[in-house]
Image: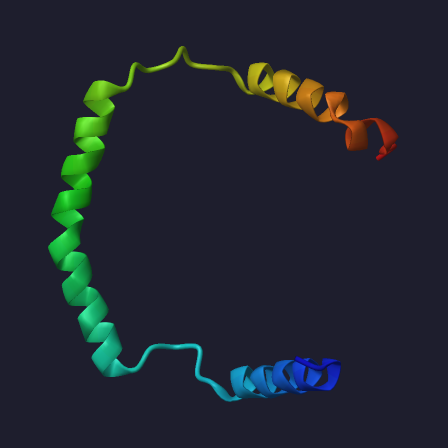
Length: 84
């Protein structure tokens, strides 16, 4: 594929996306609602089963979460070079 056809393809795709409506039409919205009504009980059941199988961790205070996170960021090579 040549460079010009790649640029033409991206330009055409960009202009196509500008024209599209970001909101679903009525038929697709109804299909989505039906799909959600069907799958919602399955997801709820799955979440409950998952809660029963996973051991809960101890509750953390906000500063207890932030300090290991900050240490992990500082330990990365890009974290050392940042001065923000």
